[in-house]
Image (cartoon, rainbow, N blue to C red; front, side):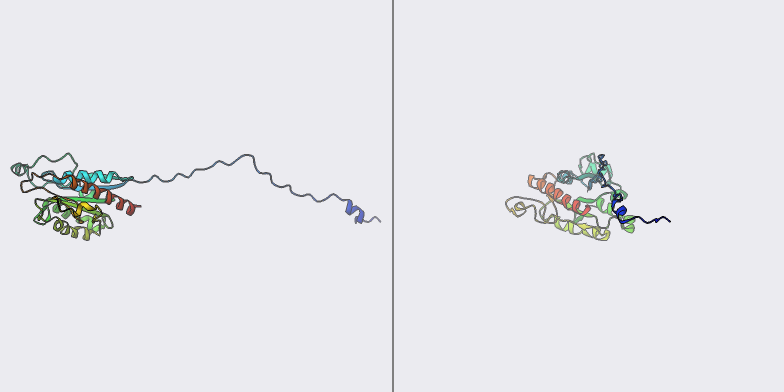
Length: 242
């Protein structure tokens, strides 16, 4: 009867077990997929003002110039509605309003930050601007402006006209909306300490003097301060929006 088991010699001469060959890298490279980074969103700063004789408007234009100098930030000019009739404005010898759109309060939440400018009326903001704030009740109920940064600038007839007081008495509007006030402080430098020239503005915000009859126009230093404030605020607002 034959033996079905192989002899030792047969086992030695048997073919070696098959070994899987090492994988050969594919010559075809996989396509490189580039991940598209989301486009950087432009930070929008609303420069909202009321101007009777044009002084605040000139400062607002400088504020916009400063804002626009910061990469990724855009300044947009808006006016608040006028309360006085054309007849009254004519008797006041007020010039025509600038060609700037009027802001609807319900558009405020679309901004990333605000620069508010208004003349003083006995140490407080002008009635036109107060009426604008008074119309923001629905935004307050929703908390639509909570955490948004803001800064302010103003104008008075004289050096003792209340520029700092006007900004101080305007802060409660920001407080009730939970907004963040960003004053320029004294970062503008030596010009704020110069006592040899008449100059509006302070660490609270830029400003100008109009004179009792409104004939004085913003000085070069006042315009530069407004531009500086715009740029300074834009940098802060950009960081907060990041």
